[in-house]
Length: 70
Image 1: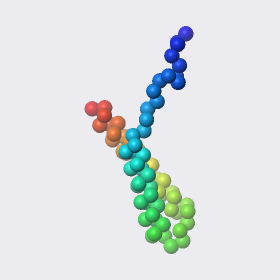
Image 2: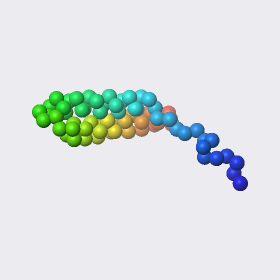
Image 3: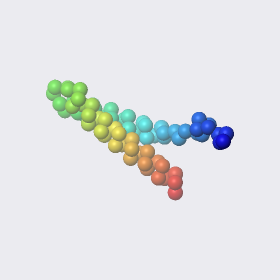
């Protein structure tokens, strides 16, 4: 029987730069879309913000892991 449990292994942490970059990109996108659309529809504002925020988060995370692996 294996004495080490899965809880003993360290869990990988997300780099704070990726989280911050994704949040900033989402906030800027939400602000720009809210300013550009006269009705201020929440769906119209949040969908592009989530897409851009997640894309920037993913790219920043990939780049940070790619740089550390070299």
